[in-house]
Length: 393
Image 1 (cartoon, rainbow, N blue to C red):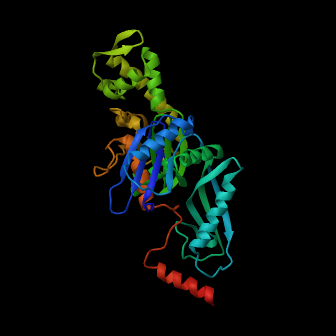
Image 2: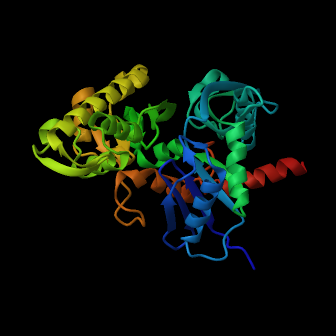
Image 3: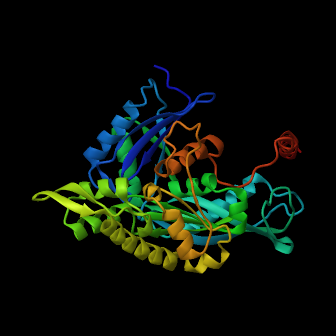
């Protein structure tokens, strides 16, 4: 049976596993199930997570499918290194070519790998230098004796890389490429003006909070905060001596980031020894206490960048559903705060826990290559002809 030529993507998250299929001219097809074998980016139960991937793909209701998948992951199994490299050019009087830029980025990636325990996933340039010209955004068609680049290298722990690949292989597919989801999120969910003025995308997931920072129109850094939605649920369950499922249910139905938004009433929940009553106002006072601690931790992590975040914060992820969280963040940081959502015409629910999935889909639809800069379409035929003539002469 002939395989389809569309794009098959898999997102492995702590709370959900999502499969999607992209075909030109059609809306994305989505299949999703709760995750059962992955925590904070680490596969902790291969059999369970394999079943989740199989079920998510089966829920697409599409046959046949491509042989390989684009895998989207995040978590504490990644490292981020700022690295640079320099390339002395052989043809100093000719324009810089795409081939030279790619060669330079490979050099950066080799320097950034730093040992056999890591696999380089992305080499993201944020600044180029051409000897006497100095800093440039796009080096193509410019001239100079040397070309250098400053980049952010994203690497994945080799053991985790192998585990991801084996999980997908066991489901009958190969891995075409692994994408670090916060990178896709920043590229898609943030607009150009926000990136230029300085902005931080904060994805508050179940296990971790991922922060993607842009300054001057360029991606500057990734940060990870080991506090997120599950820690909040655990904190509340311990405070009120109730099961985690009940704490999660109250958080979703009655939770507010600011106590003044809360109702002063009691509700009945299933406790460990029978039915118990919980005061919603008291519940949200404790929720606000945890959130303040989380914001203090967030502030400590992004402190070096805070003076440059003129466009403020953009938030997504499950905890961004919390009533009043945007106002709480505005009050704490004295910065603008926006909640990122999938668009209304998306096949995903218009809630912030699906924003990164939407970004992953758009990232694959629009740009499957690193931002090494490409020539304007009208120039490409001329450059191809020039390169052909050079080879023949």
